[in-house]
Amino acid sequence: MNDALTVTPRLYAATTKPRSSPWTILCDFDGTISLQDVTDTLVEAFGNDRCRELESQWLAGAIGSRACMAGQIAELRASPAQMDACIDSIDLDPDFADFVRHAHAHGASLRILSDGLDYAIMRLLQRQGLDEIAVAANRLSYRGDLSWRLDFPYADPDCAKRSGHCKCVQLSHCQRQGEHVLYIGDGSSDFCVSAEADRVFAKDRLHTYCLEQGIAHFAISGFADAIALLEQALALPLERRA
Image 1 (cartoon, rainbow, N blue to C red):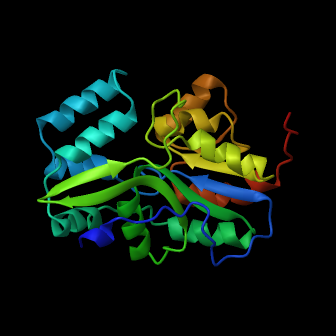
Image 2 (image 1 turned 180 degrees about the vertical axis):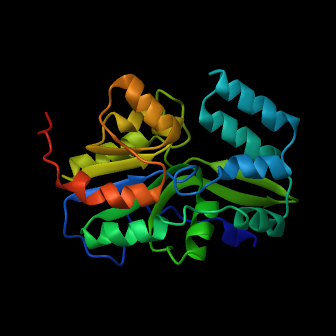
């Protein structure tokens, strides 16, 4: 693995599933589909004290996730084979593949929006036979000599959270196209977008945030819950947008 590591984001790529519903499902990846955070796993395996300093600065609000992740990835030292082996150790929610089938059965399209690493996401999806799912995430590339780089094709200079991937921009695009959006997430990169989505499935920190902010949502602990709630969520009447 060398130049082939760089992958092209496919947010609006065609899927093999026909669309027969106005619903689009936008789904976070790290901690939502994956059971471990990919970047945290790589930093633990290949990072150093500088990576942990950047994490502390991000948690304190001194820097945004874009600066934190760019700095952490630049500090990693691993061969492509080592990187692949570490990525392959990460588990996905065992019910996610079944959820994808249920979503398509309801005529909804599904896309992954992540402030994580595109290559890792696509590799893990391919392992599950789910590589037809469109993905938008930060772009990981190998620079040689065990060093790595992260680029941000979905960053927005006006993003209030200084994220690497401004998910609110992607949500707004979908809604301008007349799509109704069910958003699924678990953490801080999902906070802003959850207030704008038509429906929200929230787990962990996102569930707590929605409770604190009075954002209507369905609480889930994983995709088994999401499967059970999907038909109900898509059938509820929608308020007309201004």
